[in-house]
Figure (cartoon, rainbow, N blue to C red):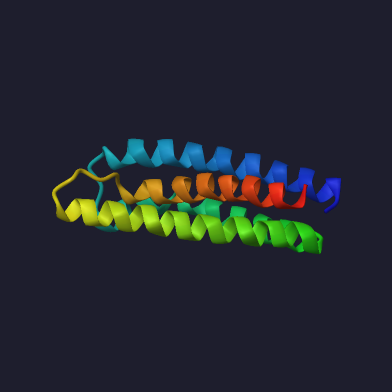
Length: 127
């Protein structure tokens, strides 16, 4: 993986996540206003727009990686998928028992945290 590809992805990440935060704040503010239902849907989905650009940048970043880095990312993804599934299922079963569970907006940050843990574990195998 080239340093240029990594720094380019970091720039894209910072810009898109900054836009995401701004759109979440704007969306939250606008949702407190008296809006018609179709407008509420559009406003609620505003923060999704930068995520599309982040996905595109991430896929370009993945294509720039060598085979070892792709293998590490694949293992990190697998760990994240299984850990997120396990946590979601556990919370789902607890919800049946009337246990308060977090909103679905927390699934993505949870998956990213698990991805980072999986990345750390996978890198240790190749160090």
